[in-house]
Image (cartoon, rainbow, N blue to C red; front, top):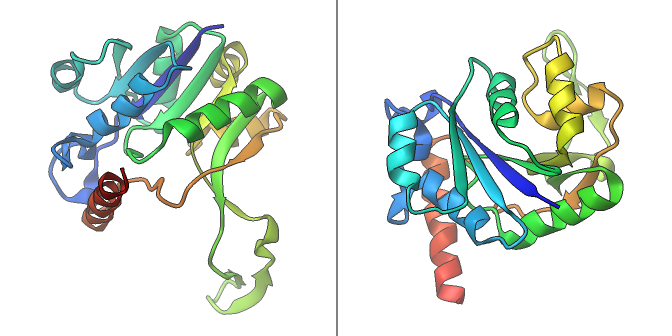
Length: 223
């Protein structure tokens, strides 16, 4: 069985305010993207890596040492288009789709998601929502409280049968899906939630970058 990771790293990084794609910013001595790719490189279950990027030349230079990186492809105008580009380049049995800006994912979480996808057909890493959630009316006043018992913040990786998710992307008419679970849900796919970690943040703002540095430093101290 061949398992490919498609790492989506084609965003503009506008909220980071760095003037370039955020995944090329430094995190603990190397780029955010290298930190992300390294986890999949070290994961025994992953056979091949495809990276979708807005800067092919920069990616090729940074990722040359990573032997599992077989494809580096250009991104699209939306996240869905970028994932579709990555899927069209890859060929495998199971595909693991991951945000390039989630550099704090662990091999254990990747393996758990793959195992659940093999068992249930599709899986996504997520954590239970900590906050109290409120509904609001049209005027911005609280109109009710959402029961958070079954509410999750869904992260990545999100894992699917390759042929099925590729076909869904080909058939999708709406390109505004912000993750692949939303797309798959629209086709009636049941997706198993795998317990993730609150450390698995998406590095989007300068504050996120500071938090990520502290998490990595804590991990180093625990080794």
